[in-house]
Amino acid sequence: MHREDIEQFAFLYLCGTRDRRLLLGREKMSFADFDRLIYITAFLGLLHYNLKMWNQYSVQFQSQLETLNFSCERITAPLDMTEYEEDIRKQEQWLTEFCSNAPNQGVQEYLRNVVNRN
Image (cartoon, one colour):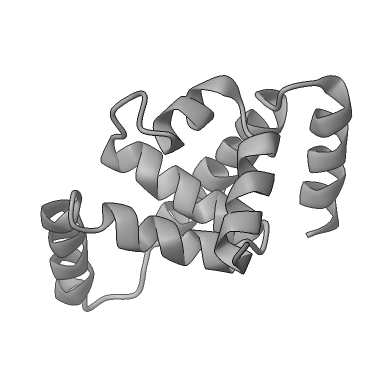
């Protein structure tokens, strides 16, 4: 078993029902879902699985990624602090929801401890 497969197995164990359906291809993944799941896997240090997800879904979301890249290149002024704070709040919300959607209370508590340590 490769490292990416072990990380995928671990992540699928930790995530909620909807995320599991998305990642197993049983439900169509949106770009917002992809963005959220990429952030969470990176936050948890599952970098091999994160790369596997990029390789699997980047073609599907190529136009959105190019638009995002183009938007970032056009920004010449530093980010407004409120924009940065909004991104941080969104990421914190993703982590909170991920913990709450974990399959049982033991996993939820474990994830909350991991999130709070970082």
